[in-house]
Image 1 (tube, rainbow, N blue to C red):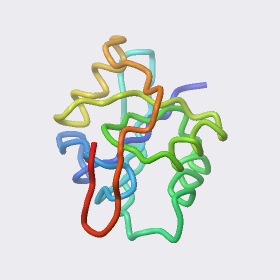
Image 2 (image 1 turned 45 degrees about the vertical axis):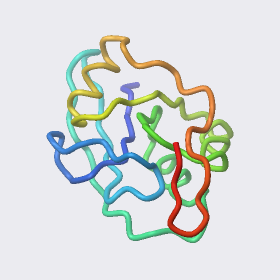
Image 3 (image 1 turned 90 degrees about the vertical axis):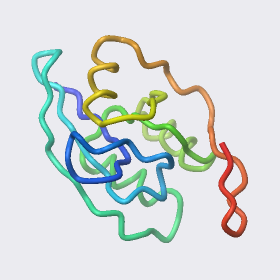
Length: 126
């Protein structure tokens, strides 16, 4: 089975940047890793908002995502990904393509904890 990587994205193309926060990203992108070192985009979904933190987690699970690359995520969706057994990796600022290449080459670390803090009002801390 090939890996399908989910990534919160600023746009719908592989050249677009990774989004700084999972739940507030403009797009959710899915990329399939094929032949262990090549990849192809299989979906780019506009994030039209969600009623709860688990909704985007379950959306990724329903699309057979096996791993996520993230730069920021709150505790509830972090725990949700653990519950549905989707592995999380700490992404870096830059393009989706850059993050995928780093994942494939083993340069991204496993994300072991939530990385977003205060979400009250307009606050958003990492």
